[in-house]
Every structure is written in C-alpha cells, then in structure tokens.
Image: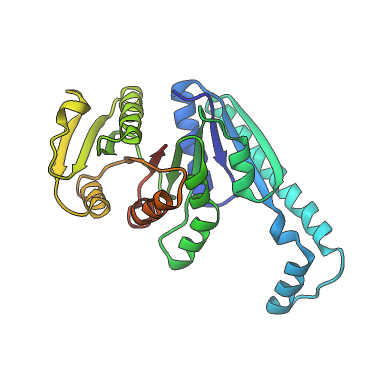
Length: 265
C-alpha cells in the first residue's frame, strides 16, 4: 500500500500524536517510519531576529542567529532521539531526517508518490488557520502522495468514512480505506452527497450512505453524528481552480472536524 511513512516532528503535542499514528500504521503494515524535523531557516534571518528583538524587548546582537542555530540543532537531536527510541520500543522500523530550510519544501522534496505523509495540525483557533496554511495546507496541496492530518487527540481506527463522489481520487481513497479497515478490523462507510446512486461502485463490504446538501457541511455533520474515527477524502494537487476547490472543501472540513483526515491525490 505504502513504501514508507514520513512524519513531521516539531515537538508539539500534535506532532507527537502524528508520530503515534505513524507508528501504529507502520507497525501494522510493516513499513519504515521516518521522523522529519526541519529547522525553519526564516526564523534565523538576522533582519527577522532584529525586528523580533525590538518587539519582545530583548537585546539583539550580530551573530545571534548562529547561537540560535546551535540551540535548535541540539533540541532537534533530543527530539529525534526520543522519536527513535519510541519507535523501536513499539517494534517499528524507524529512522530520522534533520535539515534546515522551509519545512514544507523539505518535506515535499523527500516524499515519493508511494509514501504516506503524516502531519499534526493545530486547534481551531483563528491563528491556527494561519499556521495550517503556512505548512500543512501547502503540503496537502502539493504533495505527490497521500497526507494524513491528525489532531492532538488519538483515536482507535475502527470507523472509517470515505467522502465518495465517484472520482478517481475518491476511488483510490476507498481502496486505501478498505485495506486499512482489514488491517485494523474496522468498518468502512462511503458517504455520497448527491442524488446519483453510486452504491454499486463501493462494494458489498462497505456501508453506503447518501445524503443531500452541501458536501463539506454534510460530511462534517455525518462524521460528528456517527463518531467516525478517520475520514478519507480525495484532494486535488494542481491548478488554480482545483486549489480554490481544495480551499473551500478540504480546509472547511479540516477546520470544522476534530478527527484525523486522510487526503488522497
């Protein structure tokens, strides 16, 4: 199903939840899990540090970025060592990757179409939307492979829902959901928002549900009501019109649904 799992680590609670999901899936599928920690080069720019010093009221001096770089690298080593230890403890094939640059660029440069990227996201506060757009949202838009976005709370993978519209990405999402359901002994629900009957496409091992209304709102409503553990959605990758659709549907679901969301290209 996947060649390996890449998980973004920044030390936040949500990134550790992402690591936990990555370990769980990696162990079940017997595939390697790679922990990635990227030091954001933008926060080490002297001009940026000088501006921040003025705002926060600490003393700025030339060369402070080198000191901060050493500090961040030490913190990264501690973080990745803990990640490796946890993975080995769970019996997972683990490795780590540390670099400096723009986090989304580095993550995307390391991802192959056969991989799975797992990222944590912030809470639903307004500032979190900005943070989502700065890294996670860009990875979702440009990733060559599926992306699993998880909140801070870990859930069992038992009730898997697919937003199904008959498209190629939805069919791929359904195939992945079925495969994971077998591994985790879960149940798959295919939710179609519209009048067309697509039940013949999903198979007898999937519970087909059809509803009327606005797709993103109905998906959120259904997942909350049925206490779904993991939602699968097709995601677009290129094109201005497709990105507008991604922003209006996927971002809405991510910001209004506090469960893991599996986005498939």
